[in-house]
Amino acid sequence: MKSRGIVTFLMAMPVCLGTSAAIYFSENFTSGKLPNTINVSDEDGIAYDTEVYGVALPEDGWMVSSVGIRGFAAVSPTRSLEAGLQKNRLSTAFFKVEEKGAVLRWAGKSILPAIAERYLVQVTEEGSGGFRTIAEVPGENYEWTFHSVSLDEFAGKKISVSFVTDSGDGYMIAIDDIMAGVPDDTLLVAENETPVYYGGVSEAVVRVKVTNFGKDINIDSFVCRNGSDNVGETSYRRKLLHGESTFVDVIVPLEQNVRMQYTVYAVDSETGKDVRLCTGDLFGSAYERTVLLDKATGMWCNNCPKGILTANEMKRRFGDNLVIVETHANPDRLECQEYWPGLKFYAVPYMMIDRNRQSAGELDNNFDRQLWTPVKAEIVPTSCDVTDYNAEVGFKVRFADDTDNASDRYRIGYVVTCISFSDEVKQIFYQLNSLTTPKYDEYYFLPSKIPSRLVDFHDVTVEGSKAFTGIENSLPDSFKADEYAVSSVKVTCPDMLDRMQDGRLVAYVLDTETGRVLNSAAVSFDGSWSTGVDEIGGDMPATAPVSVRRMPDGCFRLGLGAEETDFLFELHDMAGGLLFSQKGRGAGSVDVHADVLPGVTVATLRTAVGAVSAKIITK
Image 1 (cartoon, rainbow, N blue to C red):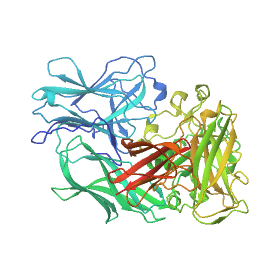
Image 2: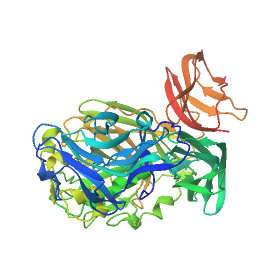
Image 3: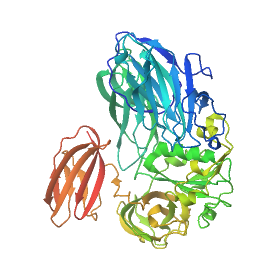
Image 4: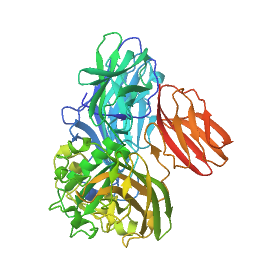
């Protein structure tokens, strides 16, 4: 198996495996060429759009190529020069399904992150001449993704399995690790759903979704370790069947301002051995952190795809705790002349986090130390009013310690970025590309000049007049520790936007003496923004119109304000499932009792005077 890191998955269903492990067919393309057990054919006869590829393309629809650092896999181009679907078939040799309980297992990957490839999995029985679809993948993930389908209906028959592309406007699909039979290996695939940053708490919940793509396994427990130290454990004590998924929550302690690097394991009940699932980082401070990543790039820069890959990987790692601001350098037509000089970058690609010069460099080589520094300020969006030409965003800001600001040292700074440009503007897009080795993932397959139809730039700076100086007197002369002050930012539609709704505001607490950003927040003007989830614990300041707190006795205390109002209180799990709902009417404080399983819940309170959500740990 050549997989690494977190692998996501689709279509897994519990399957009753056969009584004895037996592999009828297996291929992982490690030879670097199509083996004689695989047949390929181009069934559509439609020409490829060769301008979007930088590698030689196969005549028969499929070829074997290196895909990233994973190694060799079968790949098929899926973009047509003219209208019509690419129907490229990769078929296995015929094999006999000896018994019920056999499955077909494979891994798939879309080569471009922005294009989710469509394909079919079909079976033909020996002598039948026809094909039957047993699985459809409507949109494959960019990350390597395992799938499993039962072959029970073919027990006792000789069959061949095919993977057939089903797109004319895709790019390229990769298939690897094809196996048909009764699995005899241990293959637990994990998706880590745990945030990195936390504020004001002494515990965190490590949440992992685990799916079994190997043999049935009896699991005693799930353990979280920091090095060799057990920092948390959740008892399981049951069998996880092939194709079955389970969510695992492990509560671990957090030491303030100390990074914890953890690994999650499943403990095999029968062997006592640990099965490694995933790794991650936890960092708790006074407040939850949102990192501002400045990325400098240019269409004309043939080395800048390195920066794109790095930023995308960081976004996958940090999720909503990372805000990317992309700035194009002269002579790029997307250059923002108000923003670029303030970065003081001398080359592209170049990156920096939180305006910390010690972190600045070509890529992320200098980031690691700066990502784990104490967080002493918080900025939270509270409102957003948008028209086609103007926007006003309200914020609340607080500091962890008593803070003197009589000199106006701390201010709110901001930059406006474009979420996505119009089709007319996109016509000028291109990207030069000099990355010609497989370790650079999709850029290995892309041409030296990537045409506009495969290029889209997001979160590009379009207005930065207050980005480096901040707004004068936007924050009060002093702060008492942990008490909010309110402020707002008003902006007019920049020239580079057709309308305000195409933009996004990235605001932050700016230290004007050091130039550093203390914490950030992003608000999209496209209508997708809503009042955010507060830090775990859910406490709101006394000045907030509504609040939710988890009390020591386990009840939820709702703060409704002085005036009587209708309210709706709901609890959801982290996957969005509704756990509890209660409507009512009241004023002041109302206690609600709801039984909730241990883990993290999202409590939401809606009233006529305001709304709030809070992540809350329950034990």
